[in-house]
Image (tube, rainbow over all chains, first blue to last red; front, side, top):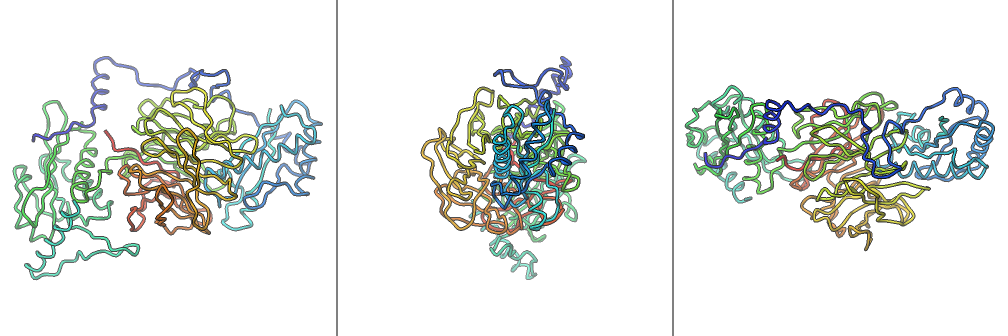
Length: 172
Length: 431
């Protein structure tokens, strides 16, 4: 056998290292797993945000809804949507010390990454409207869930219409 | 190389006539195109108790290529180690096969094993190729995949692709509360393991060009973020500084950079960042959703999708962002392009009612649709450019599944994942 190819060299080297030096295996680190290349750079754990369910329920009660809906592949706000958002803005102005995460969602009839972009467009349209109603920019964050969090599970126009939405989530 | 396969088939027909007995290996009609299927015997490998399992892996690998009908190891006669390189060709001819994979397993002084792998043209009665593969005993499946790759490569003329891995998003739970975890497995479904615990929603994991790192998107703090993951250690870190919405990451062919999308103020553009960190550099600045970037194999160009024209279409630009030009002009929308490792194709998702996987040339010509599902999306190339993996979502509440389809036509093959799956990424050939 003159043509023997050695494969799995890495596995072999690790096995030898383990016997000879007892190099500790990588464990769940307690250090921030983020390279501090920039002052903005952050540890994923520090990025967690806290939802406030009681205030969320209060927003729904007083503003009528925490959710607005969109047409297929659209992000424009119709009159009914603007009325809902104006009520949300009044609630936010009357409720200091909380922020709102404006979260765009899409139906399943778009590709994954395009929907991540489309969800941000929807959330951004809502954010712009809330800003126009006097809500300070520092109290609003924008995100996109793309098609990752459908509320309706069907594959029909009724389900898709429920999933094309932006939700105002109250956070600390 | 094609000639050998044809010669084997011609030989098989000759054998059938000589025996005056019908063979039940006619050309198979799949997906509207005629595909040949070479009968190839894979008996138990002598020399070690794992010889049966080794032969089973080789036979399974060869079947998955779509161009072989493997026989065995069950039902085939055994042979001695000494016969691996010198088989009894007449008796294999009588078995009705055109080719034979033989070999043996040998313990090495260093504690590892060697799998000796031989491929024979049974009709002509000669050896076509042999090679030995040394692995740790625990890695015996790797050696079997290498043997299958040797056979596939010799008879098809294509580069090997069977000794590879798949990273994908494993999906469990109901559609309105899906748990999504990054999972890694060998391309035949073995050695499956989860890399994330499922607390955060994850999407679009992609291999680095050497297969030692991944980039993927995880929802952390309610925003999609690009993470870089070291496969050997499990260490990971955020790749993009700041509190931005970032997604659609893919490595450059040299592994030094990661191209991705960032959404801000209702506009999504494509950026590139060093895979070792640092500040991103912007590549597109057109109003619209510019996303799903994928490098050409020489690293000089990037294909991406944009709806700047009003609908999702494919564009190609130089790697520095210059020279952006649209390449897709067929009816419908085009999304999630992936440039083939051989450079001559771009795979994409075509949206025209249903979602279908197709390929076109980098200049936009020669469009060919490969699949016929209701919602097929997210193509990823095998490292030899002969197969495209994607995920197929059923209508209603069912789970998505992974499939692989040959680029030259043929049926899509369901990948053996233990749970639902989406967003596959095919690794380069293992080292």
